[in-house]
Length: 150
Ligand code: RB5
Image (cartoon, rainbow, N blue to C red; front, side):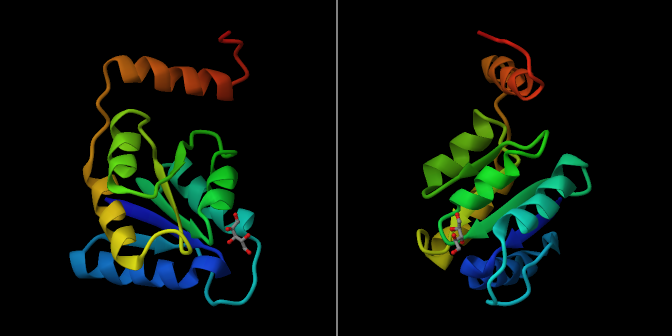
């Protein structure tokens, strides 16, 4: 398991805290920036990490910004990415089980560092349920590919 990590300045500290947590657990990751609290543009960092997931260079992504929202919007523009902003344990579990989300987004102003670590643990250890959810996730891909599913 290798994770792609990225944050903007609004969640630099959260990303560093998650890195420490992953190191303690011996989980491999690649840090796609940013590298300080200096102001940066979140789409560039979301794109780099999301692309690594979409290209199968990393298994799952963890993206953080002040709210989690900008990172999720940017990541979801990358083909093959299903990014979800999660604010509690249930969302982190269900977006893996039902949506086969491959990117977890969190906001430093929204979740505590402790809760963020819990959400990471749940997200990376929960499998996709498949079954009827597979059909629905395939429909997401159809939309992404410009298919009229109406
Ligand atoms: C940066 O000020 C802030 O806009 C960013 O971290 C993120 O929350 C955007 O959605």
